[in-house]
Structure formats: C-alpha cells, structure tokens
Length: 549
Ligand code: DGJ
Image (cartoon, rainbow, N blue to C red; front, side):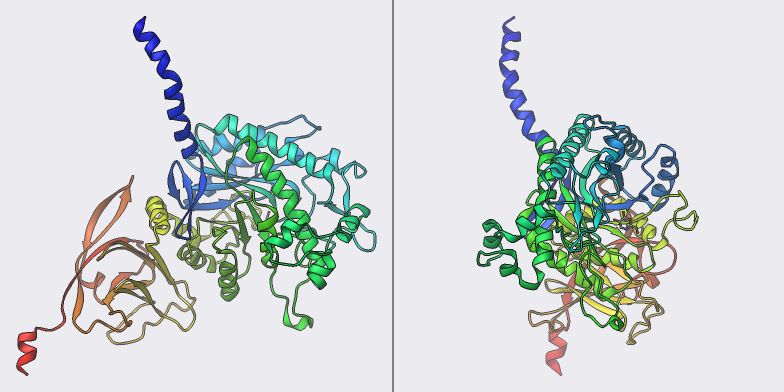
C-alpha cells in the first residue's frame, strides 16, 4: 500500500517530465547561427518531397499516387485537403480525405504535408464549399474597380475569415487527434497561392472604407515608415500593398487559430512574379493579371512578415527554366527571418540541378509538382528522372545532410554555363569541382553541355569530407589566409571509402583508388556513389634539399 501511494505521489512529477519531451518532439522550425532546420522527432529533417496533382486526394486516385512516390524515392508527400469536401454543410465535417492521406502515408513510410485548399487556390476561391459560393451576401466576393464580382472571396470580410478559421481549426484539431503521437504530418500549407486574380484589390464598400483609412500603425512601424493613409504611405503601389496586408492578416489569423489547436509549422506557397516578356513594352507584370495580387510575392514579403507572424515560412513555387531568375528568387526568400523551402517546382531537366542549388543555400525541403500516375501529365507513366536520381542518391543520408546543413558544414556546386570549374571553401581547404568528362591533366574540364553537373561536399572533420555528385570530379587543395595556394604544405588522399549511411552509421562498400580518384573523386557514369574521403597534409618541400640549391 505504501509503495502504491508513493508511486501515485510520483505520478504528477512523471507527467511533468513527459510533457516537455512530447512538445520537444513536435515538428518545428529551429534557427541556429542564421540557419534553419525543420526538426522532426527532435532532429533536422531534409524534406525530399513531391506534390500530387490537385484532384488526386481521392480514394479512387491514391492507388495511382503511391507507386509514383515510391519510384521517385521521396520521403514526404504534399497532398491537398479540400474545404468543399471537408465541410459539405456548415459545421459538419468529413475528414475521410485526411484519414486516407495519413494512413496511406504511414503505410508507405512517408511524412505528409497537408495543403489547405481553403479561401484561396491559385488566386481564386474554387475550393470553398457550395454553401459559401451560394451565399455572396454572407460571404462577400472581391469586387473589381469597375464593379465585376470576382470568384475570389474578399479578404476584408470578417464572415469569410471566421468561416475559414472555423474549418481550418477543425482540421488541425483532427490532425492532432489522429497524429499527435506519430507525427506523420510535419507541416501545413495554409491556403494555396493566395492573392486575387482579376483585380489589384477589393473595391467593395467595406474594403474601400478600410483603404481610405490609416495604415495600421503596427505595420508602418515595422516597415519604418511614417503613418498615413494607404495612398500616402505607399503611393503608386498602395492598392497592391493594401491587398497584401489584407490577405496576410486574414491568412495569419487562420494560421493562428489552427496553431491554437495543434501548432505544426505553417507556410504559405507563393505564385511569384515572373518578368514580363520584353516586347510587351512594360517592365512590370501587373498584379491581379499576371499574378494574384496581395500574395507573398517578392515585393510583399516585408508586409507579410509583419502582418502574418503565425506563418513560419513564405515559400516560392518555381516554374521556370531560367537559372538566373531561380538564383534571384532563392536570394529573395532565403532571409534571416525566412527559412528557404521550395514547395512546388516544375519537372524539367534543370530542376535536378535546382535542387542542389537550393540545398547549398540551406533549403529545408524541395518538392516538384504533379508526381503521380493519374495520367494528368500526358499519360506518361514515369517520374522526372533528374529529380528521382537526386532523391535515390540522397534519401539514405537525408538525416546526415540535414544535420550537416544546419551546422553550416555543407556546400554544393552547381554547373553554370561557361563555368565548368568551381571552388568551395572550407577554412584552409578548397574543394575544386570540375564538371563533365573526359578531364585531362592541365586542361579545363569540358562541362556537360546541358549544365546538369552538380556536387555536394560536406565537412565531417578538419580533413574529412562527405562527397557526392553527378558528372563531376572533386579534388582538394590547401590555401593560405590570402586565398592563394599554400606555399608550404600540400594535401593528399589517405583513403576514399565509397559507401552509404545505413540507419545512421556509415558502411563502406569499397575503397576508391586509381582511375576513380585520379585528378579528384570522379562521379561519372550511371552508378551513383557517395564517398567519404580522409585527407592529410604534408610539407610541400623537403627543406634540407631545397636549402642545398
Ligand atoms: C501551382 C499551384 O499551386 C498548383 O496547385 C497547381 O495548380 C500548379 N500551379 C499547376 O501547374
């Protein structure tokens, strides 16, 4: 009896001890020395993702989804949850889709990112339930400057916001109920490519009244601007910035309500602004025409950060083959207050290299769009090759890569036109990456022709590196503090182990030497390899001989 009382007495203490560890294991974003990690089960996680097609979250389609994800070697699937299906009548919820996705993901050993197709989907309101579509008096639409009623819900309406918040909170409550112990679901996308198509902003009477008023002082303060009306503070951009604030505030409130139920990391994907064709005689795309006005596009990031603090990440979708534009977009969204995450990309050959580029800029994840065998993409029964070969190579060591990236030890080299050789700096050691074969002594490497060469180099110890790549050779040299080759020391290979991480421990399959290591570690041909290389330093000259001369 005494023992029993004692055990009961300990119970509150034990409960207290377990609560923080549960909270600690919640998927979350962490920041260290300016770098971000998506933490899953307490460890940095690299999301090798794919997004399924819009109408694929159905029992009839999912059997055609899982095999494609397997062929693609993903570790995470992004899949939509439709408001119209989840709340067919006000307040009556049907979570069958969510349950199908969660159970399917578990069965296929995948993590899951749920995409909330709520008020916005590609700048329109196509996924709102019928009872919302049918009742514009209660759930008002955006009105264009010339009075057109748009298929976009007004972000300036409290009824719209409350309806979305109510549904999204129910979703998050349900996810908590079914998944809090397992963490299959690791992130939530709140809405999809928000903003409005058809007008730069809402010109309804309610919205106009707000627009004629003062910019909220919290916003002017965080933007370091003087107080005033929207027109005074933002001049020619006032309409668009007003739309950005209205949309960000709305979505921020939706996310806040959802996090109150279950605080998973939440992000918004972005239909970014692409440059307009030069011949159109203007230098800017127009908001509400070429992109949804008021979304978290490049020019609206500061407003979104201020108005939607519950959104953890603003994440650009990228659908162009233009490398310079890709680099510019990465530079814009990779910020001290924003983790880099690419939640949608195209499927073309360039995207294989694009993934490496994002990884080298600290990306927490990457996800091409439309990966399933439902036949939407021309009926082809195959997954994008350059992307699946990336994932196949990296999936076994995704945890190690995520940790190395979070620790600032990982760099990538991605081939550029006219730049077949690149140098990565690791203190006094340089990794020299040369693209394309054959590579002859003293000659510039030939490049690959279509610039698909790419490599990862991560530092494991002062003179130990983890290296892999496609059509690249990687050699190492020493340099002094001024960046020139060391005048006194040289470096050579002690051993180069080809192998792979298996459940967190390295297993060597063979030692590379000879042709495989001459002029560098040669990642060439169809067999994709990962190598751990151990180097050592030795003097460049024997001074006793040199001094004799
Ligand atoms: C971007 C959207 O976010 C996706 O849902 C999908 O519509 C793709 N565009 C289609 O290419």
